[in-house]
Length: 293
Image 1 (tube, rainbow, N blue to C red):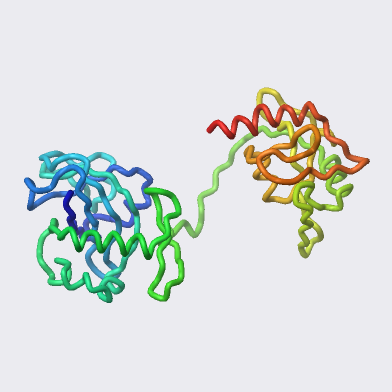
Image 2 (cartoon, rainbow, N blue to C red; image 1 turned 90 degrees about the horizontal axis):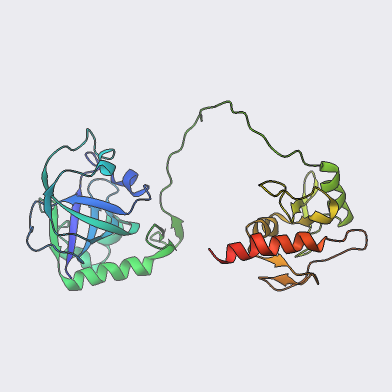
């Protein structure tokens, strides 16, 4: 395994936009060292210019070969890239942002080819310097999703997220026609009131300027091919967090009201009992189904 640094010009190739694309397969042009670059090598992808630095780490998957640019990459080239040239195919293993300013403060900076302003695209890095860069990335970046995104620390040690997309100031509007279940708000309100808007799982009562807030969660969902009933014995009073966890099968409720998947019990009041057949449906079709994914 060898280490490399590959450079790009963001005015020609929109690398930051590319790194927001979830696809991990990427290509890079190879103008030098064609016979030395091989599968398993580690490449630090570098963006030139103001605010530049290491943007990602790539693992080489295939030896360099003459090829057209992948169709999936065309959209990130300013004006496209139709040239038949030597390229390498690899996999993005880390999407990061290690700025030039930060690297300048590190001893390894003196040994990097970008420091001396060398011209070209592909530069070899010694094993020692490559391991040092990987160590810096591991030390100063907290992994949020393996191989997909990173949380970086700034020079003050504060954890900051990678830059976010700009978004749209005036989102487009589109008229749609949809069908939805008409829920009985009287049932939901009555269940929440009998529990005094306290979550039946954690006993939390959320206070807002408009009054207490809780959510009505249906044990046997109303939608789907086998809809459940919109009746009090199929409704729980939950806080937003436990509502989401329950709907996604992170936990369920046994017939004796003990919680499955987490510690605790579901609080029951004399005026609001739960239908055990609905609980069995949730355990069988939502809780167990979620555990199998």
